[in-house]
Figure 1 (spheres, one colour):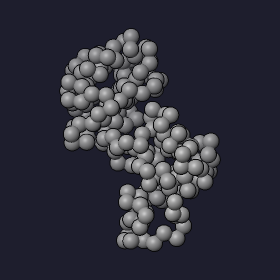
Figure 2 (cartoon, helix red, strand yellow; figure 1 turned 135 degrees about the horizontal axis):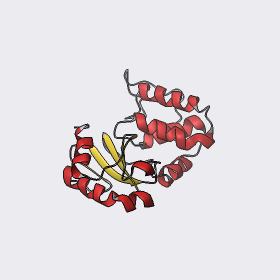
Figure 3 (cartoon, one colour; figure 1 turned 120 degrees about the vertical axis):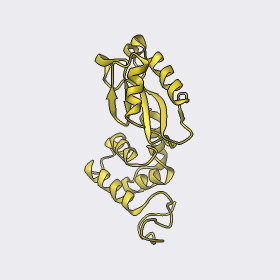
Length: 176
């Protein structure tokens, strides 16, 4: 693997060895890593924060390699973490990631109906994105909204009491 130190600049925004990793993105990643003081025990938080700043909300291979190099962590460990945690992805998702709570409480209060409504309105199933790349639908472990279930989260913002098609449509309309 090519080391990042001394990588020549091809132009003002991209490095020779990385296609998606712009200088600006590398600076943001460095800021995130420094915020956590390069503490490898905080890798999940680091990767979540990095994923949030990348279009389509995922960890591309070149970003994983960059984090591996910067934190002196084997790339295989980075991928172990990405594959273990449902909130992390190495697959491009969409501009808006719609997460449905997969807890028992949400199942009992109607998250299946919520899923079916979203699928009908957007024309996608779980682990799919709309053809325009705008929406992605997935289940995720409980995100602490049991008191307002059934609930969904869109790019980190939680919406609850979604028991009717109209309530779901009203939320989705905010992201059109």
